[in-house]
Image (tube, helix red, strand yellow):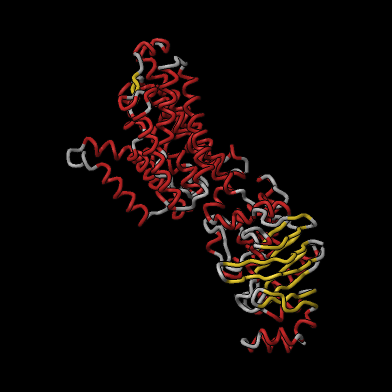
Length: 248
Length: 322
């Protein structure tokens, strides 16, 4: 197993953000994580990569107990992530951003090799022509691609994608979904949070649904989108419920 | 590109070397003293830049390392009778060790909290020196004039200090340039841009920040030992002069935060301005007020400093200025 999340519980003050969350991800899978706003998806990401430590439960990464390991150690072990709200290193060039990913990621490359890897990765995500621009000058779609390039340059085993499709137009979404498929073909396992349902259902092998910090459904995209509990959880958001239905 | 073929690597080194050779060629002592104070400013500003410019952490009490180096240097020469070379190393080393210990303790603080802690440290160091009898308490320490005999007399000792300071300035600039292009430097700049993202990317931020603090402390420590050897006297007020810390920040900001050339330009520029202000009857008592106003104006209107502004607005200069 690439990742085993076992009985994770996390509270913030009186609020239960996650309660007894279990999830297993096999090598080479793309697993989607969905749920209404505030369901605890990003909190779960933050626990996986060590930004938060859970109150209860364990995280096993490739069989190794990594619960509450510091984020930089998780990176060295082969975990990379993108952020829902992009965090470019604004005053550095796009190239240097991605070089940092390569230098400090799993392969821990010397800086002399990082430039080539960074260029290669930028070409892969389609940002090669902006390599010398300052990261802060990119538009939103480009920043999302930069985040992706930075995490890929680390050559991770497992990639956590936090809403990489949000804020993109339909063409950009199609392109990004294609890129995500190609990443999987390179042998990277992917766990992704997404609100763009159609795209997520399209690309995921399996989907897990969180609501109020608990897993309410899991299965193939078809199974999940027909699950009455999932439809109920999304009833407050008719558009999403509708798009779930149309996929089925 | 190979570092040694980059003009931006050589430009600051050549400028400082030329500045240093000028009084050596003419053998003019007054000119030497003027250049000496410029070199001091350049060393202090370039050192602080490693922390302030590359890592993005403001240290308001950075002069504390200059003072520590000075005190350890003077103590080892005056009381223990060490040679200047050893005393200088001891000064740099003790400043480095102090930075390592402090860094481990206070660099977990982010932003303004770290800046506040650094002020406290400088004041604590001054209070300590005031009370610590082996360091002479409030009177400090004075070198016996005979000490200079081993260096060919006082006149020669002054030249010797000048040469050593010139070499130190060149070393600081080379180190600053090397760090900027290194993996270590890339980690520091990632921390400056977004510490949370840097950690998630795999930068061991606590360790990187601590080593940046050490690097930015060692050179002022060495300089402190050299300066007070030349000065022959050290007192708590001179060693831990908080205003000098503020001036260091002004110099870095004036020249250009996070550039190699910036602190050289800013250090020399501010020092020139200060020299003018001190002898000018209108300004001589408000020199620090001018420094403060200058800092305010830079932050408001030219946050990138002189070198940063030129980089942004004059494309052809890019490869020359870094």
